Amino acid sequence: MSIFSKSTDYDEASEAERQPRKRWTIKKILLAVLGGYMVLGLFSMIHDRLHTQEADAATYPVAPAASARDDALAFHRQIAQVTMQCEFASGSLNVVMMSNDPVAIYQGAKAVDADCIGMSRKLDGLVIPQTLGREVAQAYAAALKQCKSAYLDRWSMAHSLEAALDSGGKVSALADLRRDMRDWKSSNKACEAAVQSAPAPLGITEADLFTALGNGTGPNGSVASTTPDLGFEGQPSPAIRALIHKHLSYSADCQTGEGEPNACALRDQTAGQLHSVGWCYGRPTDVGSDSRWHSC
Image (cartoon, rainbow, N blue to C red; front, side):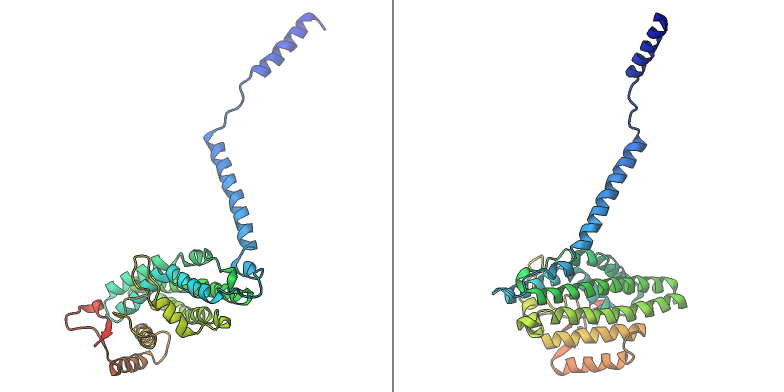
């Protein structure tokens, strides 16, 4: 090999070394960022699967701590705070359903649609106190799982109500509303029952929960209620609140023709019961959906 060929080899090697490195293009940067998010999402998914409320509760101490009762009542208030906005919108929808105003009903359904869609994520963010003991913690975990499904059903019901109103009474839209209304009624009852029974092993009764919620305060310092809606004024007793809640539920069923088959008769019956104990609906100056139950 001549000296010239060696020089050529050297020059080619030197030229290769002097070649600039390939730069990252915007496309490659975006793909790398997307890949990073996918990896983080995968790790987050694995973490969530391993650290569910039910899985965590199963590792809690068996015996409740001395503060278990107070902590359970505080956790119950925390659940009420998290769900208050959705419950407020739902209660408002129950009230406007009595007004026969399709625009007000549509707006009420839109509010429930917007305020209830994120409830599953919010309930997932609750941390059940370890001081409650394993049995109560597991009961709360199961109750929250049931409630996540119930709030999803509530959102679906509101979405179907919007669609039914928009459709002008289309049969398929009404059928979807009937199905979603039935699913929501069923899952909502199961959610309420599960949450109320969860702290029972600690000697906490339904009346205790009513009292605890009635003494709590909302985010703006307002007094929290067991039914944080616009269906009544003042602070009625737990029994009156329950009766008003039933009346509003029957009224909604009577309007839609779904749920309780004797809803209209039961609505009138509960209204009569409320009147007999000194509670009236609306005032002469109220307009449409402004009416509320109040002490006469």
